[in-house]
Length: 107
Image 1 (cartoon, one colour):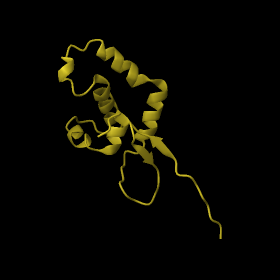
Image 2 (cartoon, helix red, strand yellow):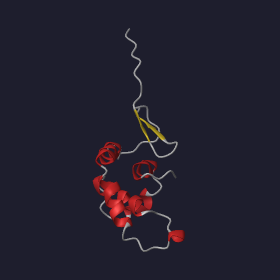
Image 3 (cartoon, helix red, strand yellow):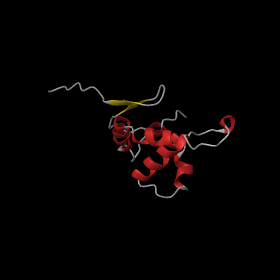
Image 4 (tube, one colour):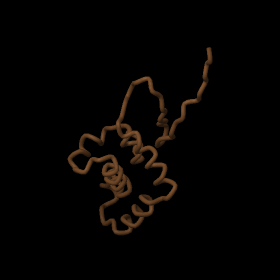
């Protein structure tokens, strides 16, 4: 009988979060393709550059800012890519570990 030992691929999330791929169940998300979109975005720096541009127009008071323009932009862009066109979906998605990972937030 053949016994295969295959290492499980993973993505490094923000801070200490590590995302592993396996097919044994557990926490399941239908938005797993966003990890590849995140890597594509990271290599091209599209949202990072757009976030810097938005920051140049930021007139908010720094002590009162909870979310950066970059994290809000990424949430919107990755939400659209995942098929969540309505902004009211984001109220539920804000606690989704996968969305937090691609946006760059660590709970």
